[in-house]
Length: 172
Image (cartoon, rainbow, N blue to C red; front, side, top):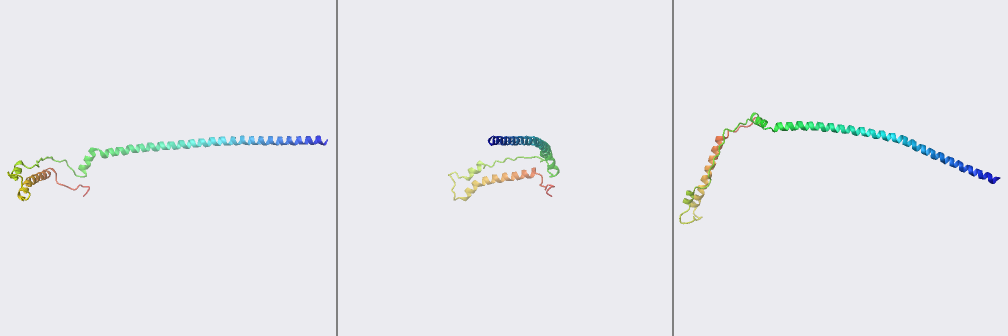
C-alpha cells in the first residue's frame, strides 16, 4: 500500500505545483494588464499635453512673425520717407542752406597749339637742335599758353557760377 499512497502523494504534489504555476501566470497576466491599463492613459495624456504645448509655441511663433512683418513694414515706410527726393531736397534747403545754382556755363577751350606758333618755332631749314633752348622753349610756350588760358577761363566760369561757400547750419 505504501506504493500506491506514494503515488497519490506524488500526483498531489504535481497538481499543487501546476496550480501554483497557473496562479503565478494568472497574476503575471493581471499585472501586465494593469500595467497596460495605467501606461496607455498616461502616454495618451502626455501626448495630448505635448500637442497643446506645440500648438502654443506655434501660435507664439505666428504672433512673433506677424509683429516682425508689421515692424518691417514700418521700417520700410520710414526708409522710403527718408530716401524720397522731396525730403532730401527739403533737408538740403532747410537744414544745410543749399540753393539752386543760378546758371551753369560750359567753357570749351581748344588746348592744342595754334599751327602758326608751331611753324614759327621750327626753323625752315630742318629740325631744331636740342642744344638750342630758345627753340625748345618756343615750341613748349604755345602749349603752356593754351593751358594757362584754359585754366583762367575755368576759374572765371567757376567764380561766376558757384555761389559763395557757407558752412551748413549743422556744422556751425
